[in-house]
Image 1 (spheres, rainbow, N blue to C red):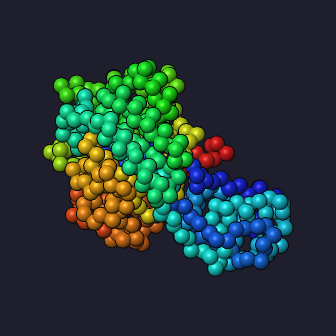
Image 2: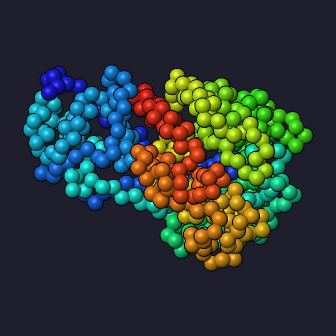
Image 3: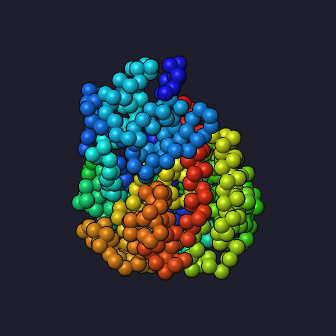
Length: 497
């Protein structure tokens, strides 16, 4: 029993289910088919009223507790949100190790202020840290509210990044094909009851076709009004062509901007150069500063490889100094990059570089959650069954209007802009990439991280193993980093509480 002079129970929750993990989802490194909204939400058919004190409650299944310091612990699990608890709240949570009625808890703990106690119990329930005994199993809703579409508006690019999967041919999407792609996206969104459409303008270097972006997004905005479907848009860029005029255009169109930056100076230049071999860092840095000076905060996409892992700490420090959202994404081998053996992810080297970057973050914790940004494709902010939207809630349009399931397999098309409901065709296709549920993957079914990690990128796994139904080749890396990522989130919650 705690002392009568007990601190008020304090429960700090990372994100509610409608929040968007900053930095997740818009990579131009070719590995992202993620939705803006969480791919899943926990649902419960019993709502808590503080008057219902006869129900027996227990700690949510699969809960894990990790000490942060002498005062706080972080509680995480696949069935509830990430939360930080002080000692009083942790004591209260552990009372539900065995089933307890809420009336019994309040009666047995009269030494705690009753208003504080009832508030804490409600917060424990709302975070699903405690659940009704007879309703303790969670149900994952796999249907997101956003249909995302990748518009490959050009294959041209002024850079020749070593890990790029494109041949860089002189091919651009026409305005007619672009409009048809947007029309087919909205058709599928309407037919499949999506509330939002997200368009990703990508290449190549999308800003080589900035007039096309303008015309297409104005058209998308008109369809958004006609259909009453919410529109979101982002331009994926290498950052070298940013001007104040470009930023003004993006602002008028309400478009977001994601820029690739893989390191400072040589750590960026070693894998992202111009066609003539010159490094691109100085121009990318200039582009980021122009965006900031003109009122747009770009998201930074970082592709981590064997080459630049050592430079991550300095890059992260620079990003935090400029208060930029970011995401750390692992290099994925493709047919064009396979000859560059030094890009490969060597486990100990990568883990060492990532942990060093985490140390930098700990010293300068941002005021935004990083749960969806720190470890490759993992989204630690909410449980889900699939790593991305490939084959489920995602369309990829090539410059001819053909539709693929993933931008890294642009050549494997399964539908076209002329199809009435291309999303249904994509969902039914059994060729090419298969984005299986984590519950179907060998090595994942019993893992405590399965509903956050979901087994990693399906394409990367197939490249390494020849199978889609098995855990990621990066599994050991993920398991080494997840606890540290959660620890950072716990420290961040405490700092800004």
